Length: 80
Image (cartoon, rainbow, N blue to C red; front, side):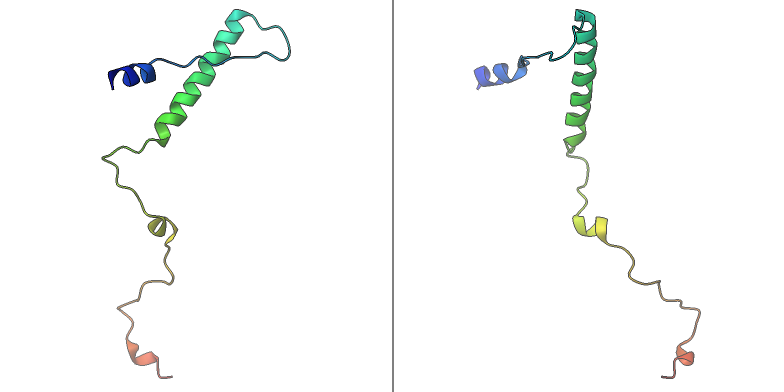
């Protein structure tokens, strides 16, 4: 289990291919920094913390179907 955990901790190297232009090493480093930061933010946002309460799809989509009943208006005006 230790060998697998150590392998997961090491970052994977991905090939990078420049298709147009001739960027300097500084430009490539800047692009990689921005892409890495964006990826880490998105990855962190997708992880649900255990302390957070998961909201059901029903409660997200539920909305008031009608106005709440007005208790101050009597039922006498509804005579049919």
